[in-house]
Length: 362
Image 1: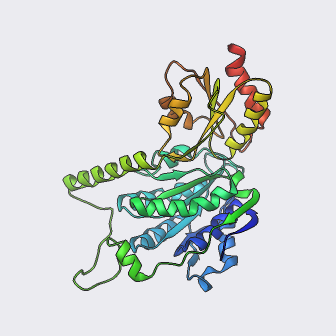
Image 2: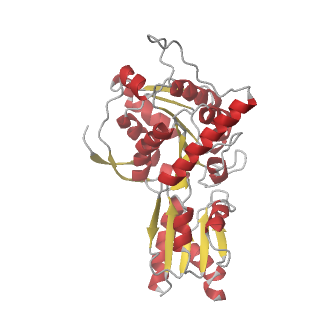
Image 3: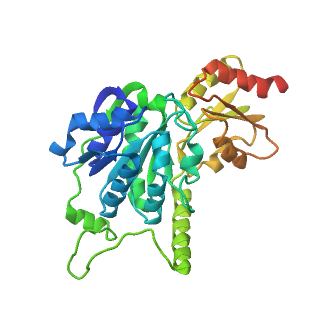
């Protein structure tokens, strides 16, 4: 299949991109606002065309453990869920990280805590970027702000996950998951053969092979000294990721007097607020982190050097702002504007917050 332009939801784009990437398996459980991922895969029936396994598990716990098993064999496997469901997956995600296994996890965030609301949120930032499960680990976290990026980040997430042998997460919000836009889908990749998997993933459990015996993939190490060495290896991998894989988008920062930092769908709203501010003669720019981990500290540090203030805008009570404050010089004021409970601000509200916190105080 060649590249083609289609109109679809962000969740649907995830499903189509997974098929075209040549993913070997999807294991998931329905939960609003991401159920269309599983529904689209079931409708497309890729097991008849590419051989991709699609299975609705009995729970989120079951689905992440199916991913764990598939990843251990070197397969490109994934799951998707929304905030409460991803909370249930945290133990399995920690096992994947400790076993140094590649996998793709999609979280289309909804408002919480608890079961909360089915409306959009960005309140899983801490869970995703700080390692929501137990132990010292990180996920590669990609934050899409468009349907196109939902599609693009499937391949990117899988590629980075296999490159560094660590799980990757697409951290979307309910707006991006549910909205419809034009998207260019990638060409169909062939699924890897078993021989290619053995060659590319020598660590994988592939059955008994001549001169090799059976592999064992596990997150368990009872010798504390060896477990420390494992952790040192993990941390070295994370430093390499921080060095090589920081991604962000900048807009209007060259002459900015004020800087906004926002990710996902809210960054689009902030772009409109910035355009309105510039019509009024107020020079505002934005840094949109694409990788929430590794976080673009240096880019934000450089962009904020000559501004009068930094406004962090999120659909939560204030989470990414902690990383923004680490990036910005302590002499530059940093404020937060956020809405919770599934309420999404409009550009005027963002502009009003910028005026209230900085412009009117200047």
